[in-house]
Amino acid sequence: MEKIDNNKISSWWLLVPTSFLYIITFFIPLITLLVMSFSRFESSVTTVGFYLDNYEKILTDGITLKIFFQTVELSLMITLFCLLLGYPVAMLMRRVGPKARLWILLLVVSPLLTSIIVRNVAWVLILGRSGMINDLLISWGLISKPLPLMYNTFGVVLAVVHVYLSFMVLPLFAALSSINNSLEEAAASLGAKPLSIFLNVTLPLSLPGIMAGCTLVFILSMGVYLTPVIMGGNFVVTLPMLIEDAVRNRYNWPEASAMALLLLIAIGIMIVISSSIQKWVKS
Amino acid sequence: MGKKLMSNLEGYRSLWPRRILVIFSSLVLFFLTAPLVILIIQSFTNESYLSFPPPTYGTRWYTEVIYSEDWQNATFLSLTIAIIVTPLSLVLGTLVAFGLERGPKKGKQTIQAIMISPMVLPHIVLGLGLFKIALQFNISDSLWAFVPAHLTITIPFVIVTVGASLQTFNTSLEEAARSLGASKFWAVWYITLPIISPGLIAGAIFSFIISFDEFIITFFLATFQRTLPLEMFSTLMYQVKPSIAAVSALTLAITAILTVVLMFRGQVVGGGKIIK
Image (tube, rainbow over all chains, first blue to last red):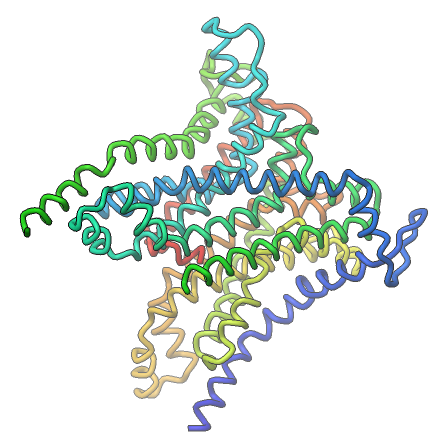
């Protein structure tokens, strides 16, 4: 009996190479950021120590915190739109036959496997000042000046939703397809209206999928850099853009590290909220 | 009474606004796929500017891109990284998946969560930390920095896809081979690996595509070298030219081919497993 157990423990040797890699490429970088965030940056010299300068600056300079909340707001908006657009698709996937389901799944997943930058380029070509929509509307004489479809929050949200919608649909579909049809049919046969069945049976049962999808999309959106830069110009600024600027243009590692930790804290809070909602619903 | 129940049920099935669901979902799916179709159509313009629909069609910009040294170098670098990263990521991730599946149940979940945690760390944060380390080791702007960095974000996907396949694998097949005298290694090699190959293929393709498309981490690590996404980004920031559409369509073709392979292997059809 004991021998088998040893055998099992020895399987963990298989984790060693990857753990070794992670220590160098994951844990040490994260610890470094943590240490850096408490360091002092004065006239381009970084002093390691325990200073709260960077956090103080972030919280009091009036700009960083504002942009942080803008990023949170943007991410919540993106998450909400993904949910509203994704839920009906996931629901349809559950209701159609296996062949149609496969096709819908194919369409849902295909953007996931195409480059984010390619998808952003596509939106630039569609929404830009001389993009497809403005071109067509002007040539039809409907408008005289190009509409501002890009370089604003609208363009950024649209493009990010396009990028992350698949991440919402997949967990939603997984949760919805694990609901037993007979539960809804039982409610229906007792005279419940479709809307009330949806609100009282389907929606609560699919909550784990909703929370999983929302958490995932929120986390991804908080870290999004490329799309706001391309679609927002300099008009939509997110925390990742500030981080990038602090390091690459100002070499201010301590401040960038503190902002990175702020990002991680926000994500941590989101994970805690979503898991406590799930626990609360279960009980 | 039974009749009442049945008619209620019928009512539920037909009353459900299925048509609205179909129309709405079609619009969403159109939203998902149309931009890429439009992009491909625009890339075949023969003009020096982008417009839709293009006044004249041709492959002028494809020719320009294919013969451009900048694009060649960027493609070469991206492919080099992805080709090194994919097999390494597959081997390391598969070892982890086996270790987790065959190891003690106790603590498995915690260790698995740690092993796939790079998945939920924003790449901007990971990129920032890796850049600092790379500067310290003096290896930034080289494959020595790019490859380990990409591995960190691809391995979790292999752990998840291979892990999902291993969960459904019936170990008694492997035990049968061993009882017939096969060593542990050869039993896994000849029995287990072929059976879980859909998971391996899915993991390999995910690794390739994620590495091939990676932007922000490489953006931090690179100073002079440019991968394809970096080259596309800097071109795009400078000017929106038809060449960018042609390159996008070409990278789309590369990833689409891999996607088709993935689809035919039916792994993604397994449902949310890959994401969960």
